Length: 138
Image (cartoon, rainbow, N blue to C red; front, side, top):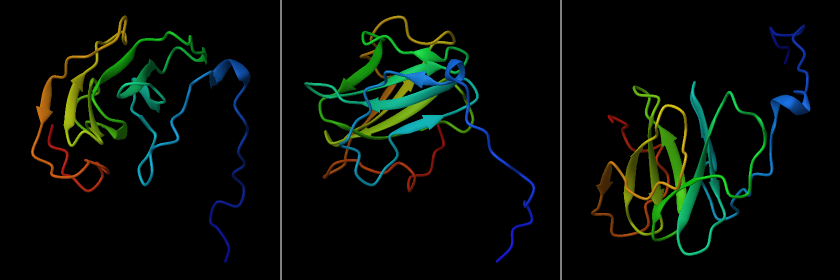
């Protein structure tokens, strides 16, 4: 089978354009461990005592500080994250603690750990896993 994009070639990004030192989680089973939008990159990370994820402004590539602020309000591991298709500062996270939380990220990114969600959706009987099968109207 031939492709109509025969003359398109990729090039690896330079080190200055990459993000390094992110402790990526290994507990995300069937979901994505990262999400990106025009402003931010969000990555689910390993953390003790609950679930957390990093939110990094896209215009700040390079080595990520190990003490970079996190979004950390879940009691269980974060299973999936997804940005709002309508508002670049709104992200949803699902967790093993049977909740989905909606977060509002400040324009410049996080300056300290965020523990208070904009909204908490409860009612799941089992862990809230994949956000892709939920309609995103937020």
